[in-house]
Image (tube, rainbow over all chains, first blue to last red; front, side):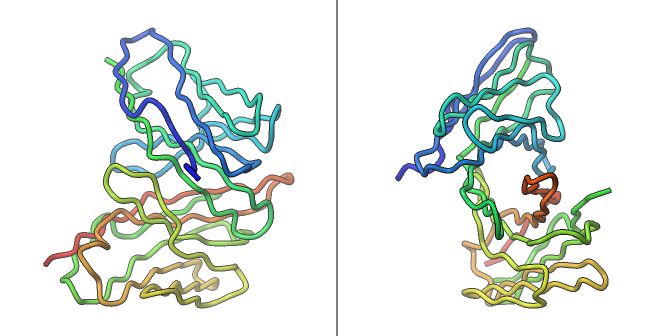
Length: 114
Length: 114
């Protein structure tokens, strides 16, 4: 199993550009999440999905959009990139809906907006 | 409100000594507490979890202690090794509106001195 795969690993954007961070998992997990991690900080939840066709906002959704057309894929869209969106983005997934809800993370996507 | 925070941002430990990483939380309704390890350039990985009705749980070289009276969580690593150098996050999970919310703390960087 590949687990959670994120692409690209690195990207530099100019202010106002748009891009999509891809995330796919092959574990048949129903829950998927997008987090951002700023330097020296913890993980902030951007959006999450409890299953195909269902998404909801997290703590910091402004400037982002998501979709979940399949169980496997959960892309994160940045429409008008801003310097404040410079961060490392992590996608995660889990199957457990009761219990500890342990997340499996991807390796991260480092985004720089100049 | 809900928050998970850490007392020490950086911890330096001599190889072979024991490490203790602390975490404070404020949501008394949390179901589980989880420790993750994040190595440089990678996504967080699960270490150990503890249910809210437990005080202690042991794994391989790691022990998690939960003190609900003072809302404090700690991760103890025995005989710390260079491979333990990483950032450690505590996280709490709680059920809200049928969704299991995961809240991460800021993180503690553990530096192992050879």
